[in-house]
Length: 160
Length: 160
DNA sequence: CGTCATTAGATGTTGCTACATATATTGTAG
DNA sequence: CTACAATATATGTAGCAACATCTAATGACG
Image: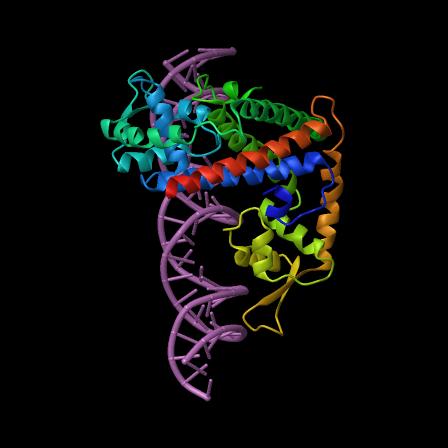
């Protein structure tokens, strides 16, 4: 269903406006789908993202600062997310010996196990579908990169 | 800047995965930009959306149900959003005469005035930019429509 | 008419984002 | 070494999303 029907809006000031609303709307649909899947594993999307980043470090500890830089929501609060993951026993948090301000966060065996239970569900979603090919996905991603760039540049000129 | 740099991730399982993350990430950038602009008018994005829907009704009152259907976040709580807009004097809420369960929400003159202060800022963002044309925006919107459709259909087959 | 499922809306809770601020530690300029 | 800016993290708050639950009113069916 096209965006026009989904939110029952037929008039748009421009395709830019329409693409903007559509991006936000689609994001919510994707997030809802991800959240529903993750809920079975008692994880939220940001919690899952933290775990993914930690696993990607392959044993190397991450500081909260590093987690923040790699999260989708940079202004989210990695500190509190680590708190909840700690309560669940999925991560470990120890003071950093070199810098006593920082902490070193690592994923635990339990955390890795939770992730490994989720992995197959994600790859299952990636099967090829003729109505949305890998080439389509690549085009979409590139357009989104350029869209962000334009929106950002216009904001800068507006605030001048 | 491409998504790979923005979140410092270089490996992707597929373009589908990449497009999914990029859609969510771009949505956050767009929302942050919109929220920053709306903040000057003491409005949040969902509050603004409600006002836009009400103005679009051109005098006809809207029920909370109708607002919910047309909002981007369908599971958000239009009832509470109307509460805050009511406190600001931007909307009016009266019991519906035909159906005493329902309420009729309308935008006030003050609400229309706030919107009219925002309108020019939005159209300013729509100026043409050769690095992201209207044709690009149209392509993007169409790809997003198809992306949603595929994700949804796969979710349905998964839950069978 | 009376029963009961349905509908519209309100309300309570949890977790998150955005933002401001606080605390502790480190780096740096004089 | 001292004063102070910068850094890393933690914490407090407002508003929202998601979800469950509750109340009041309506509609449908025997």
